[in-house]
Length: 503
Image (tube, rainbow, N blue to C red; front, side, top):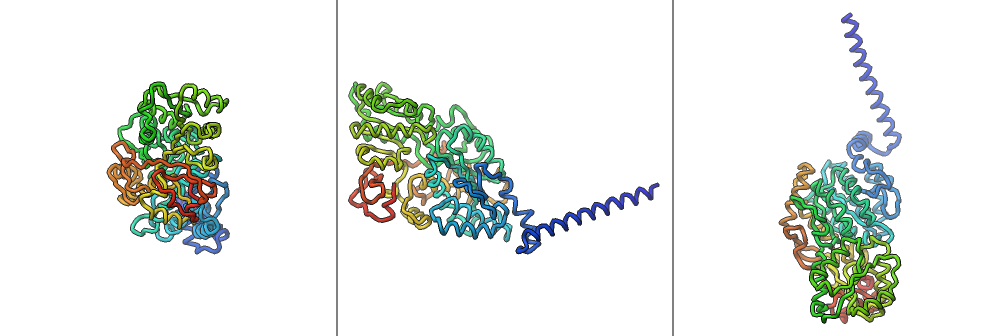
């Protein structure tokens, strides 16, 4: 009986081995049929060990490392299949025909890294860049991606450091879904840090997720007061940094420029804002802190039944001496539209002031109606402290249009790579995330588009980089006007291609 059992066990083992050999044979045969051009053993090794980085990304999930375009929804099959060399060739060709496309350059650099890793087994870092890809904000999304792509391109050319892969994230400028999206981002298990988001509302909504996972996120654009973004939450360690100044700096500049603190007793300022917007409401409250609250007439710019003529007449009757326009960052569909209508009916009667969101081509299209409009922005190419970054950007993208979003995103990604340079690529993901946070606390990075970059103890930008621009009619631009810093000598403008497209 024992002999029968022993023979049965031996038979079972032989059957299992035979079965495994058959499975392996069919796998080899199947791979050879699909990939006849590949070296078989290298191909199989790549198939099982290097074809996984993007395979857990569903299509149409608002995340892409190169398998699809989040702008056009085009699918990139070579990348998704893990055929890195063909993906490199494909994206190279695409970039030659569309050099100003940051999404393609990011995917090209990702594919190059994956091809290199297949050959050398070298590791690289991965970050996510979250931008608002929708109808109203698509231009902003591309501008933000250009800054990140430029730094990735330069970082990956330096053989001293591991490469950098970027996952692009479309947050749709939607604060109601960004919390889940942030969880989706971090489910990928290799993200060491996040760049984003654009609107303060989204930063506020996503912040608890990033803090829970103890991962740094650097916003290049969210300017609401930190207390408003934290929304009463307290965290033992801060993981939220930003390369742009808060609305506190900008409101102080505007009050000083217009000497609003010296308004006569009965004179007031009309502030148009979006009550549901973290950023817009934060700016309003900062004006209230710095001015007598009785001096402010607050108007909801997002109301659906907005009648600009009627509202303008009402604030004039209340002795408004200036209009301050603070629509949200294109989250509410009506706010910016209503802001334009107020500009139209004002017809240069009352001086107008606005924050960064007004730095928009639609303002330039109203060049004859914005003669007395001042806009507060974080950066402008004509007065940038580091012209080398601009020159490199112009060469990289084949255009002179380098705007504030690109500069702030560039600096956010740059300061992050400086932290990455100090890491050990073989450390655990959690240790890398914590080390990035520690390094950012003390880093002082020179060579940013906006000059030196450093953070205070809260994670806010130390350097005051805000400045004021106005609209200047000029033939240097296809819009017939340009945003120009108020301290810039307009006579120095030259109608060259690089300046003709500035806005």
